[in-house]
Amino acid sequence: MSVSAALTKLGIDLGKVVPPAGVYIPAKVHADLVYTAGQLPFVDGTLSTLGKVGDDEGLVDPALAKDLARISALNAIVAAAAAVGDADRLTGVLKVTGFVASAPGFTGQPGVINGASELFGEIFGETGAHARSAVGVAVLPLDSPVEVEAVFTIG
Image (cartoon, rainbow, N blue to C red; front, top):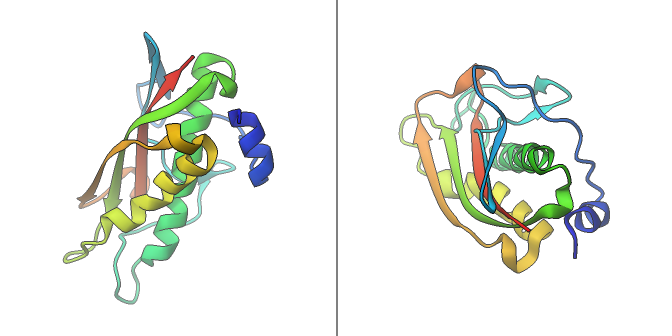
């Protein structure tokens, strides 16, 4: 199934590329790969949730952070598709790196980044299976709870 067909089946609209927050480009093509910059969970230009992820009151709930990782992954697809001119040129996901702004003692980063991995599986099927790192960090740009970068294969 093509990327656009999978997105339609899931009821997902790609939207627009999130403008860079610094001096970089959202995605870079090299040979048969597209590398994305770290993508935050922007929706319509806004981060709906800010802060650190954890299990205590006043922190971002890990289940919500998982949803935010899914949005970040979708933003990575948007950036990669724009770099190659057509989402259907994306043929799979090679590597994902996920960052979680973590409260002290929070160790659930893999579960949070599963939001991104699951989306890639839903869209790409078997070719969405990827190598991955899920890293806890003290803080992320703009106080985002999560950030996801990906390397896509193209055909």
